[in-house]
Length: 194
Image 1 (cartoon, rainbow, N blue to C red):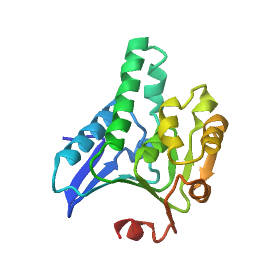
Image 2: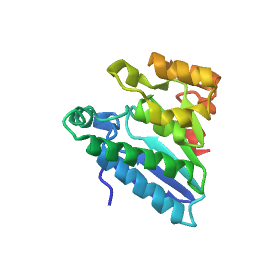
Image 3: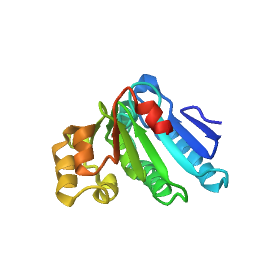
Image 4: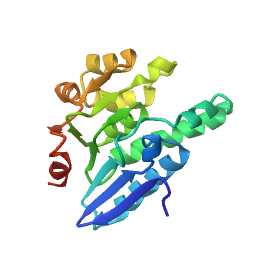
């Protein structure tokens, strides 16, 4: 059913895993569609009590797939609007999900990947994780995620994150209020399970 994510419901936990480790779990249209399907299925399943979102491999999610991003230059305005709308719909599904949605972030959560983590209700992070909205460095404004980022951190912190494009450590993200719980790398998997 899924090619770019893994989905499993066990003991009340819907586990959604971004599963493109060779691409640092980069987002493309197919992955976004699969995520929307997984969130829809988990929302309708009474056996689901919580959703856990994580990434396979060394990173949570590096953001948009660069090959997909390059195609936006050739796409029509309407095509680009439809793709942006699809991503916005994913964020709305996550925010309106009837169960808590928890991100377990290890490695990098950048750009759209950081946006997906930010859309979750709770972010658990390994101490070596990194967060950032580097879109400004390639001429984009992360406008879509600004609304959900602003509910997690102060207005000034949100502004700094999106206009500087800097990547921050999990410790700094915790200080800002973006990350809720921070765990040592060795204990991270066990703490997430707990």
